[in-house]
Image 1: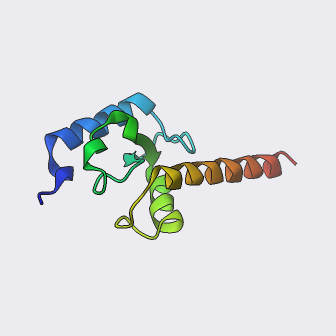
Image 2: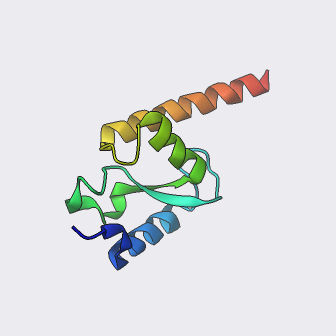
Length: 102
């Protein structure tokens, strides 16, 4: 199997996702943005280039997802994993915001 991440379709998908979101959907950073598949592109070939199957994450949030929430890039990512991660991060950011306001 060829590496689909080296294709023109992947580069177009990535550019469209980042252009659509403009910033990290978790922390709003505009630094080192990456396009993240909601449903793993390796395991869901039918939706790997679907713009709706992608979100923009900054490098820090992307690494946080793959190294802390999931065990690695190789581990299958599901929609449920993504939404659980997003909810957890939003909760953590709200707690941090409340602590800083005290």
